[in-house]
Length: 437
Image (cartoon, rainbow, N blue to C red; front, side):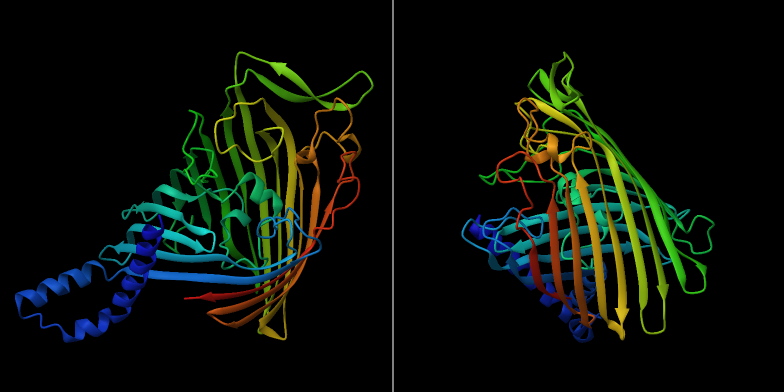
């Protein structure tokens, strides 16, 4: 595995070096000779090959040691501060165009390389129709077409991390599947401002077990995911809007014949009721909408974003995430809701920006904090509602360098579970530099 990672890293730098030198070499090639013509043919074949990437080194300080955190992962038990490389992405794109310079084929391979290891993040191909310049087909490992924040790239996002709900329900954002898109590439088309994606996916995302074994599809259930969106469009001078609606319809199979559903006892107390069924497929259904509004000035912009999700999530007693491996213990179905609200404002000029983000995630809307931990309720810490207020400053030093200073103020419901009877001390400060090429 170590040699494999070394080979990957070495090949990236070699390809990058060759790409940078390609034009210089072409100036030296004598195409009147057969060898020169052969080299020129190779150059033309790979002339649409691009390499890009970014690295995000950061320092974080937590309010207490060993906290569980959605601000870049949990802290070790004796640590309340750390240096890390949050993301180190290297992406390779190959785009083939037709005679009109419209895309025909797009291929992407992206790795994430950090101190935690090297992982594939994207590995997909896309075929475009060149008759109507309207349709495309994507297959492989790629981001699920749900919502706005999930598909906003980590290099472009203002906050250091996606919201708690995104990370829980759309862990790692990607999945294996196939997707059809309607997205006009003709600016004169009446459909130019409409984008529609619908795909079929395995449903369990991408992950690895603790021993490094990759997770694969474990049941026959698939997620059908779609989004109908309006691309950014001016409604009056300098004021732009965009938005969309999303849906996910899927299910999860398990090996246990038992599952738990929310109910109320004779005293009106909410609890998980144990049930049994000959059908061991439980629902996973998400619904969402998102809206973005931006007003441009000569020196900057003001931007507002809102996104809301709700639905049914089936998981386990000790998790509210989609299981990575086939469940052998009883499954729990929970109604959830949550969302994200952003306000972004440039100050002085476009190099300086302030950001405020509010996100909340209630994994079980049928219960209050006072219900959780009661005897016989079968409720756990994975039914607790969290809200997070993030405040930050972003400095766009130049197109390749960005500085982010961000504070996440995290609040949880008070419950009857020991350790969760009051608000946890789990706020986090993040100082991040991003280098991009």
